[in-house]
Length: 312
Length: 312
Image (tube, rainbow over all chains, first blue to last red; front, side, top):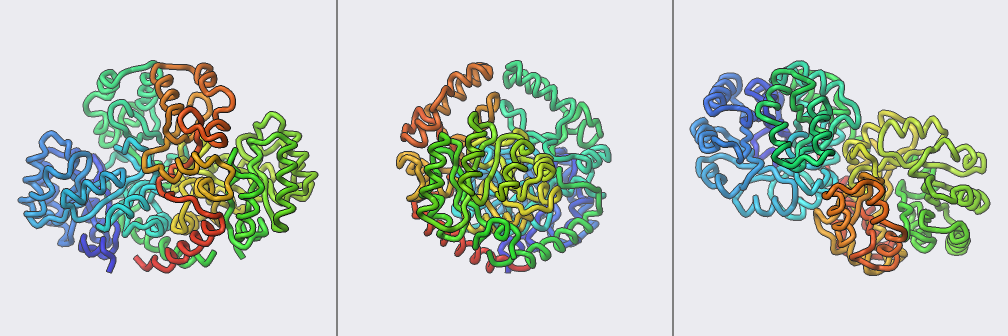
């Protein structure tokens, strides 16, 4: 048995990433029904909204699912309470210290995975008592580690550091890339960008089309002075680059970012002035598909790639 | 037959990267004798020195080998003449426009591979008439593309763009990573950093030890205002970062770099003031080994990884 599938209670060792503004109950349920772990991204939800998504997921599917909780969320205690009361099977924590909430979640019978960008953070997460690790490379969308370690280099280093079930994230949108992650030592993968451009994603249709249109070189890790994030290049991105080039400090950049930029871009569809968080692998994504079709394609590509790799 | 092995005339579809100050005839011959393509890195050689290395290689091995030629080299015509007169079987060009010299090399019966950092450049290289492509990701040591596309994202995009034999570079120092590159669509790989820390490399022993000691996060892509290069963090790197932080322009940074920094670091062993070009994957390299042992280990790891990847 694959240790990640066993931990998650899924058919396949694949996690649909919980993503702000893009992954509500509908995408999570479609992914779980397709055999992977569907995940509700709570980072863009008020606690009451999260409770509603958990309830709607339950109405749509009996299969295990997860909730992603960024630990820096201001109302974090209410989110923790919501997943405990909602008896959510899996919680994926990110962007914060796993020591604070892991044991409370585990005591409630919840499996906890923590997202890391280095082997050092993987060791800390294991010491904090998590059940599994998700290691996320430089090419991933959204927020990102400061050391800029790519998925190719990150997986083997994290694999050396921990024996826990390990999912790799960043740069994975095809079955070939899943096989690559396994070859590097992961037990499975977490996939984000590919599911942004799905029918069931709650991303605005403009954002989905922007992802499907994106080519190579169209994303960039930026806002390194505030908190590094990979964005699709648009008008807002260019404002950030111009401000950075003329020496803007973290305070100025935070003011330029302001509040609501991510919602404006990803949920309301303002392609020019909004913040569009997406992975480098968007260059490989060319269509908007049902989540079930995406999963079936990944599985088919994985088997084709596995059959194709011969002796050297 | 593997198309890359067929093109190169080697037993395995693996290329030892030609690297400034680190890869002379001795490393190239040891690698070729181990079954991969040994490559002399001419970027740090005067034309007469290159001729000497070609002659010494010929005295040491009858097997096919290559010479890497950065096309921006000031005495480029003399290098081109040296490889043609030396009847070098394979030339790997990088850092420049492949249109200028490819046909002249091919007319001389030389197989030409060009190093690219994007699918767009791969298409241009194919149009220029090259025999094969090496795509090099963000994590690679030395000079690097401006779009920062990682190996994981780059290989499938280049694979879509060209049907030519394709080697992947950047982040590859284990057999598992070779399998990963093949799973992503490459026909084989080019490996640099791992061979810097080999007995036969002409790197200074201090640099070899620095590579073996390097851990995660110890390299960084820097000097982006001049020409992006991935360096091991040391005193010189910190000077560059400080100058960049206070707003130094390209001219100032070029003056700080000065002449001979790379030689001083990699060949003369000045670990603090020299320029130490190495890949992010140095974090995974922990020893200095004979090239033959490195190749044998890569092959063993590849087969172990291939045996380990099961159905999802």
